Length: 268
Image (cartoon, rainbow, N blue to C red; front, side, top):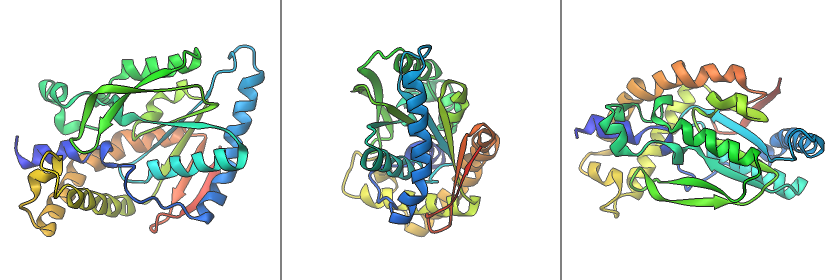
């Protein structure tokens, strides 16, 4: 497999690695407080609606590659737990990506992170299990070191809020109780993406089995140049053709400034 094909698989949604430093300022937590209150109100509605059986509030969160969905999800979880006393489970759509071998067999490895690269049946089953309160719910796992889905899984117990985050999750907005879109200027997302993949490559330097270890021979400038071309060829088309259009489906739009801080929160 050539460099370009490997990079296209590496630079999809899954590079939003939750292990990277989070921007979690007090100002951001304050900005997210009304969002948490909106979620809490939805939880209260569900708990008193006999037609729902009191199932968890399923909240979808989407946005472009490297926009900071994992950061926003963790910050929102913190507000829900610490300020409102509501447990919140976070599930990433990364685990629902088709395995690399399957993507290669189907000839769509270069479209990893696009809608067709996910196991839609598994996502539907996951949401349905939450709605039926079939806890614990099994969720697939993704390994950011090898950039592939693992053969093992995890399980989540009952939580009043289940936050499902990923680039194309709002394609399932009809199944969610609330939908959130994380927005930012394309130039900001591009810069954050380049910073992220360079950091991931540096972290892979001493891990021979890591995906980015294969590119250790390139200088940062060479690697950044290739990454920039992948943004143009893969992540930008995914953003414009598939991710950004789902913004119209969101109940809440959170816009981030170039410094990662929250610029505005719009309720619709």
